[in-house]
Image (tube, rainbow, N blue to C red):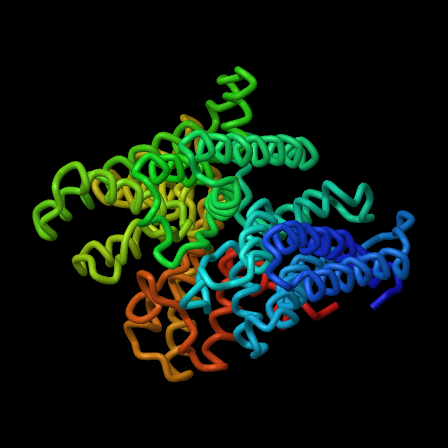
Length: 486
């Protein structure tokens, strides 16, 4: 590989590592405040991570305009999403909370990928520094680390749009042919921080301790789902549950829509109205269906059913993974319905996982058109989104991502079964990891965890989390033999 390509490949890793190290150092605040005895390992972890990031920036100078291989953006994204979880294991190992590499890498990957699958069966006895690291890693990963690279590093010597779309293979470009990446980053970061602060203040207004509010908002605005309680959201007040449901719901909205509404520019939302209305409609209908099932089949009162059903459904659709109760005890058809909702996901351009409702909407309308053409073969009726025809290229991309998701799920379930996981739990864990929802089925569902998974199963699940965060295509492109041909 040419020298300029090597520089372009490794230099972007420096800024995220410095950012990750700084986030680790922030965990010194609760460690010292609560005197949990972990300030030294946390300090060493943060300094090591940040120092390596600085060394990378110093060792690999900026590219001076030489032509860069177009494969580099994909390699950068893959390198970042594997390297940051690797350094993220340090707070778990140095504090002694986890002793095995497989456990630490699984937990770190789940945090950075905002998945919510956890190794810990008892989080309430973890040191405060580790609890904050779990929460802050999800907040850090939820925004999109590669977008942070673009914001922090002014010049990578490569096309910024190619790096943006390498991380988000289905980037929401329905509003135009090109995306102004710098504008998208600025607006997204403004909304992300604004929503975080707003919901922390809202929870504080209900009497929640600032420590609890910060951790819960960090993990729910990022669609992560890690909690500082063993029962997730079950023990907090009903008002606080509704506030966090609002946090999760906002995390599933395209952040440029929120920014447009905040700046009183509703006209800029027009090109996303179809998926926005579909997201809202799907949430309402699904919440009502789950609530009715809870009343008729589980004996809940209407008040409790509407609360639990709506909060849990929002958590599933946005792939947040927070739990209003032990869902493993719920009616089985509801759990199957949740699997379908998590595969669907929320809006493109949000922190949620899954396929995204924009792609689901295009799939439905494409199927409808195919059926209509059977009856009227000479009719010209293109697939439309927001009133405009959807290009054949976009439809093909959506179809490819859909089938790649199904293919990866099938292979993932097979690998987990080979690793010794029973079929039901393997299917639940695979879908939970690739969609970013977190809780699976069986022992890993509800208030359960993944601590009993085998070494190999944890590594497979970790890769599935990264695959899901990159929407499968990016990593598969890097692994394809043709990618490495000149």
